[in-house]
Each structure stands twice: as C-alpha cells, then as structure tokens.
Image 1 (cartoon, rainbow, N blue to C red):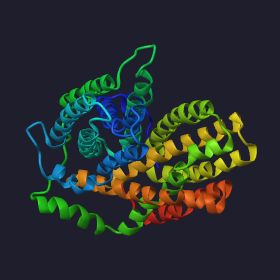
Image 2 (cartoon, one colour):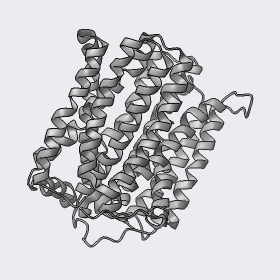
Image 3 (cartoon, rainbow, N blue to C red):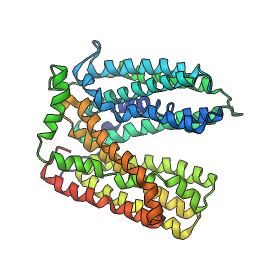
Length: 413
C-alpha cells in the first residue's frame, strides 16, 4: 500500500475549514435542549421527574432517518440541495434558540418543551444535511481526517454551549442570565450561516432520486443488495457497543470508588475531553496514511483494552494517578475509534442518497448502544464492577471478527 505524504495542503484547505465550522454549527444546539437546559430547569427548582421528561426531545436525533429522504429528493432553493437545507435549518435554529431564552421556567414549561423539541428537530435536520455535505465534499481518502476535523468543531461547540456557557451564568467574571446565554448561543449560530453561504455546493456525478418514493425505497434496496450487507450492518451495531455500555455508568462508578467531584471534573471531564481530541487527531492522520480498514482493526483492539482497563480502579481505589491513566487511555482510544468509524460509515454511502443512507447507518450505530446501555446497571448488580468492565472489553471481539469477515467486501477506504 502506498503511503501518501501528509502536507499542509492536505489538511489546511477551504474544504476542511468548512467541515470544522459546520461541525461547530452541528454541535452547538445539542446541549441547549439537553444538559444546559436541564441545568437551567434544575436551578429554577423544576421537579426532577419533569426534567427527566425533557430528555424525550432528543428522540429527534434517533428518528432523523424518517425524514432524511426529503433532503435527498428536494432542494429548497437555488444555492444547492445541501446548502439550502443547511441555511434554512440554521436560521430556524437561531430563531427558536432565541425564543427559548425569552421564557421563564417553571411558568412556561409547556411552551419550553415545544420550543426545545423544535430546536432538536431542526438540529437533527441540520445534521442530516451536514453529514451528507461532508461525505460529498471530501474524497474517500480524506474521510478519516475530515471526520476528525468535524468532531473537533462539534466538541468545541459542546464546551461553549455546555461547561463554559453554564459557568458564565451568575459568575463574577461575566455574569449573564439563562435567557442571555440562549441569546448568545443563537448569535453563535451565525457561524454556521456564514460558512454555508460562503461554501461551495458539492459536485456529484450522480443524479438525485427523481421521486420521493425513490428517495425512500432506493437507499434501502441499494444497500441491502450489496454483497455482505448484513455483516456490515452487524459490524456497525457492534463496533462501539462495549465502549458505550461501560460509558453509561462511569460517573456513578467514580463516585462509588470514592473520587471527589473535583477529581471527576478535572481528570475525567477536562483531561478526558482533551484526550479525546488528541485521539481524533491521531486517528484522522493514521486513517489518511494507512487506510480505514487497518485503523478500524487496531483502534478496535485498543478500545476493548481501554474499556477493560477501568477495572484497575477497583484495585487501586481513589488514586488520581490511576484515574488519569485509564481516562487518558480510554479517551484517546475512543477518539481514534470514532474517527475511523465515522469515516467508514461515511464512505459506505452512495452519493445518490447520501443523506438517507448516512442517517440510517448512524441510527443503527446508536440504536443498539442506547438500547443495551439500559441494562448496564443490571449487569453491574449481577457481575460487580471489575467483571463488568472485563465483559464490556470482551464485547469488542465479535465486532473485530465481523471486521475481518468484511475484507471480502472492500470499499475504497
């Protein structure tokens, strides 16, 4: 395999800058209907059961494949099929995020729920368009690096709309109200609007579906007609399952092991976020040089080992050094695995219906994780913490076997 040299021209170009900024636009609304909104409601003494119900607005992200064919079939106006959907959803997000900031819980809870769902709906639709845009604007060779760059923008947005934004509310440094935070975040969506307007529409060599029926039916029939389609779908379901199962209970695990909130915040959250960004960067560069299949195999092994490594804390107890070691190992490995996985499912899509197929594949990837994670507490209760992490690590093995089988059905990545 010929290794292609990585240069500034490969990485620092207009297309990669667009991918970075669109990743920021994609990530910004997520916590504004999730963790940030729940923190606001909690500070206003809304009942915890009611706050829990607000989690349901996030179903829009899991069900986005239902309306994704619309984005493959229709262009809203002349700037292009992908860019027209992006700019419309971004402008709507600005409006509805701003409107959320005008409300006062607990008096306006019903209206807040409706507006939060609208934000999640438009955010999920923006994600469909951005994922399709990234697939079509980048070559298969650039997909791993582009996925990493996209996730950089996404996670920076999470930091701004989450930790940094919440920290400003009522702070001594720059005190703002919850409403003003949402006004500020609505303004930050301008980054996405300007990027979309200045970007170029992807040039694809296939025509979009001619009818809505074709846009709904053909993505499924085309994919399922490929050799090894079932094995590929099983791999997508399994690849990060063990990683997700262990991650579902990490914070309760840290608390039970005796770590303080300061340890959890500094080491598990800040060091973890930094480590994941490092992993994304290393993963993107490695994929560009060595290809997606080879990196998926290596990163999949590292993911399994790093998941099992959390059992170390059951032997050392609340030691900062051991927490730092396992968190850095896990987040770097997970970041590399995420870069390769996103690149892989992106390259699987047919450019005739990129939006629909990517939405379907990403939904399959998250559906299994979200469903089986619900049983993680029962697993801990039955097994104990250390065996739980060992089992989660071993869950990586079926995915790796499926990956080896998939060599019979190569794609150009």
